Image 1: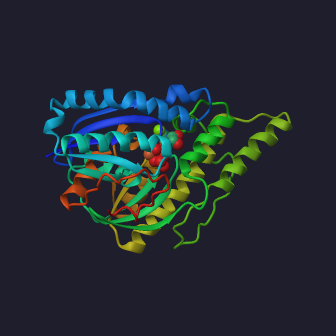
Image 2: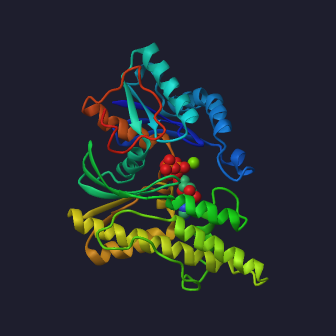
Length: 338
Ligand code: ATP
Ligand code: MG
Ligand code: FE
């Protein structure tokens, strides 16, 4: 079965062809990062316009790399939320047009569920149930994956997402967007015990997160050091900040796994590519007898393949959308069981 999938929720235009849910035949990703970099972050209006320009050529490229025609596609999956409304609309409109013109079933995919399903592409043996920690640019969530179409949200961030904190701190330190990978690289050379930053909501069975206090503490530190003319050691700030985030993520994930009786943990989202998080999570999982799963780096950040995998498992249960499908910028993970 061939799934054609489209992803345009933020600043990557991507199309993929997936065979039988788990085999990537193509995964074409056009990133707009260099365009948004001069503004220090994603400019929604520019993102929408770029998606319009790229969406059709990228679909053609995905089909050509997979060596199939549009007629051979069995169904079309598309991200319809959460994300930037104007960006989402481009993918949704393109998918609906193809669905209508060629009479192909349409599947509306939740972007965050897509991030989680990236794990199925990188790990052919992975099956539910498992616990997922989703850490991306806009979300930080602990989700119980009870089955391919059954999810329970245990908790999420009350304010900033983990990736957002990485990006904001990197920006103030003068690194280009997106700053997460830069902090990751810097942290490797720094002393993670150099500066003590605060942790929030660390009671045992609290599965909510809060990173805005930590973000402010790091920004205050940077400003104060500069005001006093002392400067700061960038690698130490990066390492200390990253350790604080990672410790919180690992501690809550391990507690959540015990709470819901899961033996497998799958991390997902852009921040899942962070080497400090991978290392600490691996050590903690080994100590507790859990198995850790993580998508390969290219499948951690936004891509069409993860949307195709999610769409396939929705199609298997007949969860199709009709042509009234609309972008939903604030779509919640448990509300998309259409
Ligand atoms: P969402 O999925 O919540 O809508 P998004 O799609 O913008 O948000 P992703 O594409 O999943 O987010 O991930 C991008 C985020 O991942 C950015 O914040 C980026 O800085 C962060 N990131 C990527 N690589 C790393 C890394 N190695 N270390 C830390 N953060 C990283
Ligand atoms: Mg992106
Ligand atoms: Fe994303």
